[in-house]
Structures are given as C-alpha cells and as structure tokens.
Image (tube, rainbow, N blue to C red; front, side, top):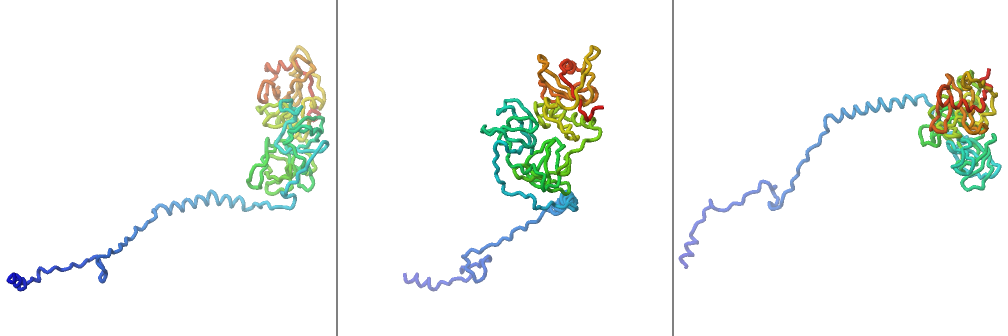
Length: 384
C-alpha cells in the first residue's frame, strides 16, 4: 500500500493535457459568461411605394380643378345673405281661433270636403297660405270653413293654423306667385331641409331678395328660402297684369295639364280637375276665375250654339270656350265640363279616366258629349 502511494507522488502530470477554460467569444470581457447577452435586431426600414406621391399629387390637382375652383368662381361675386332684423325666426306663440276667426292653410294643399268625412264630395282644394273663416269647431278632427267666395265645407283641423302673420304684406319687399307646378321652400339659403312645397298659384310674401334668392314668410311664423326661378315677383300690393293675347296664352298654359292626374275638385298638378286647370291657367295669365264648374257657369257670356242636322253642335265651339255637359238621364243635372282648345280639341277630365284627356271633336266621345251640351260660356277677355 505504501509502495503504491509513493508511486503516485512521483508521477508527473503533463502540461499538455491540463484542461484549459475556453473563452466565450459572444460574452463581453469582464462579464459573467453564464449571463445571457441581450440581442438587438435593427427593424427593417419601411419605404413608401414610389407611386404613392405622384398619385397624391394627381388627386389633389383633380380636387382643385373640379371642386375648389368652381366653388371659388361661383361665390366670387355672390354676396352671402346676411341675417336681417325683420322678421327673424323667434319662438312661436300659439294662437287659438274660434268661430268667426281667420285660419291659414299650412300644408302644400288640402281638400275642402262637403262634410267632415274624407269619403264625402270634394268641394275644392286649398293651396298653401290660403285663408278661410272658421264656421264650426264642434268636430274633433275637422273645422267648418267659409272660403269667402260662396264656397264652404270642412277641412282637417291639423291642416290649418290660427297664425295669420304670413298673410300680411306689411314690412315685406314683394309678393311672390308660384308659376312652376311645385316650388321647394327650404330652411336655409343654401341647402338645408325642405320645409314645404308651394304649388302653382300659391301667393307668398318675401322680406329679403338678393342674388336670385328670396326669403318668404310661411304660416306659423316660419321663414323659408327659394330661388327666383319659376315665380312671378310683384309689388307687395300688386296683382298679375292681364297678358297680351290672353286667349292664346291661356290655352297654351292649359294644354300643359294633359295627362295630369284627374281628381274632382283638384287644384294642383298632382291631382287636377278641369275647373282647376281653367282657374290656374287664367290666374297665371292675369285673370282670376272661380274654382268650381258651377261658379264658372256664371262667368263671361252665354253662347248659343246652332243645333242643326248639318253638323254636331260641338263643331261650332271656339278656342277658349268653357263647355258644360249634363248627365245622360237628366238635362238639369251637371255632369262634367271641358275647355275648347285650338285645332278642334277639348281638354277635360272624364269620370272613367285617371288623367286629364285631350280629345278631338270627331272622336266618338266628343260626338256623344255633343248631344249633352248644357251651356257654353265665352270669357270676355277672348270675346270679339
């Protein structure tokens, strides 16, 4: 045992086989090699596509040419309407009315019915801002009204207002009469929301006029805006003058009602009667006529047509004549009316047709009607 120990002591260890600690090349000098080193990766730099900048420039130029430049040119010489002192929108004061008081229509139009029932006969149709006198307030949803021209009936209570400020020509610049079928009245001078459509023949008053814009007074204290296209502009107290060659212009205006929806008593292009077409055509040419066939039977002069076997009586009519026909079974009962046009034609609404018709004298319908002529009236303005 002792001999073995001595041998171990004398054994030499070669330097060549001594273990050597290898240096970690990924560890900083002076840093513990067993601690992980943080690695930092530089993110890849994002580059804009080469086509993006040219495209942006093109879009900007297009906007400048087609949007900005026209807007600048159109507004360069336009004066933006300014608010004025009269009468600006204020808090509306509710006004109550009773029998004998005046009320104003606040809708585009509303029918006057013979009774407080929509199934009853149409007496006529009121237009925006027309006034009536209240005669009956006993019905919950209806008001009895008098139109002041001998006509009376019932109108839906919700269609009327007791505020009559829109009827006054005081503190206004001019009277406005609508000659387009319908005119949009907006909440603002440039755009805004639609307040109401004013039908042909509506009379309003404007307190502002500039650069083709009008500010008009509406029922219930509202103010609305419209442009000056499709309207007549008059002095506040003036009426439309009678046009030259009234007969020709009157008939030309009436022809435009062909194919309009036919509604008995109607007074707008959305539903017109023959009497309504006659009244509006005359109004736009400076002549005021009543609303109903029964009233129109009293205007102008009576015309006695020859009744011979040579030709039907209808052949003796002249352009502008108002023709009234009786029922087949009752010569005293009125049935329908027509307006005589140029070229031996009649404008009329037939009970079996949905729209206004123009028929020729030699048509079967006209020849049958010729046997039922009740009376013919010729307006003084187109009489010889």
